[in-house]
Image (cartoon, rainbow, N blue to C red; front, side, top):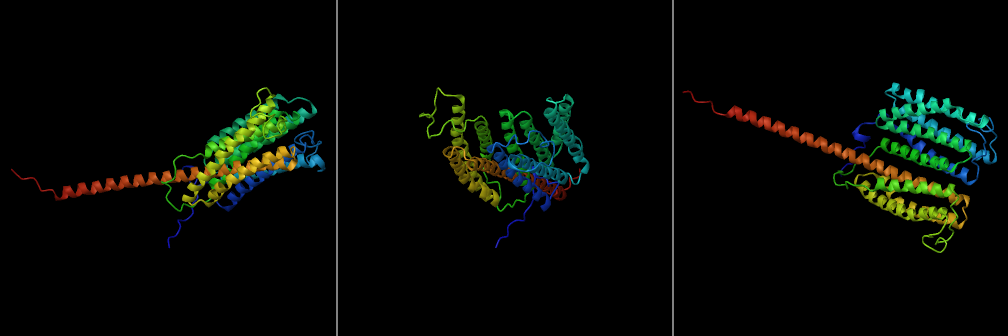
Length: 402
């Protein structure tokens, strides 16, 4: 009976992760799960029209602990949940820099305080004075410049953790801006776009920190992958859905055909936006399902059972998502249908991100093995040639004397 090779943790480039162990992985998985819940609750805030239940930000009616009833429970509860996600991101940054504590000071002691102080000041001034102070905006800008510097400076898991922390802070500021500026459509769409990007970064981090078992050689796997293309199209489809939701175009078409045509020519732009979302769903969904099934084959060959299971489940998620889109129209945007539609979209994006991160991880390890084997063969050949030259010099006859 042949034993499977031992599990090993790899990171981009074949490096061992700076922060290893069950605690770090638990933090990453906990942040992913909590982020999906946060996105879903954010959908409930929108779907219950609770976005302005708290008229100020970051406080609610002037206090961080208001009475949680009605819309305030939805809106401020959403803020509490976002704070918990941010706290997990801080712990991830600390864990990823555990062996180099000085490296975490830039983001935790400089970037994050600058952004939070500047953003909170801006929110308070906008609500009570009607304008954002220039110095508050400067503090936020300096915080982002510093944060980006430390993101690009970090490596491996630390870079993912630094990027996640910067994104969750951005998500909080955009949430505050939706309140300060009375729910503008552009900021609402950016709010969802950032949340999905944040989910993708956390999912990639969790995938990179997880053990991966290689049951067979990876040299036979396909060199090309449709996962990144499918992921990009799904992300674009989510943004289209956000545009439909926040521009009020969700019910401009209530039948299989929109106003009796496949594409009404003389119609309001909202109709065209709605139809684009419908047709693009078929393209993005088909590619996501195909990429999932293709990625499943490669995952099985690499012994990655989690990615294989996600790949098998992607077609089902796509069919569920399309069904929920239809149910959203048939129920005239029932709150549970619309919220479930957003929840499944987050699951599809997270599944594709996980599979892509693991696929890249596997390919990098395979390439590292190939390079190592190539170097080993070269060194062996050089040694053999050296030994052969030494032997030929030893047994060669001495030159005759004149």
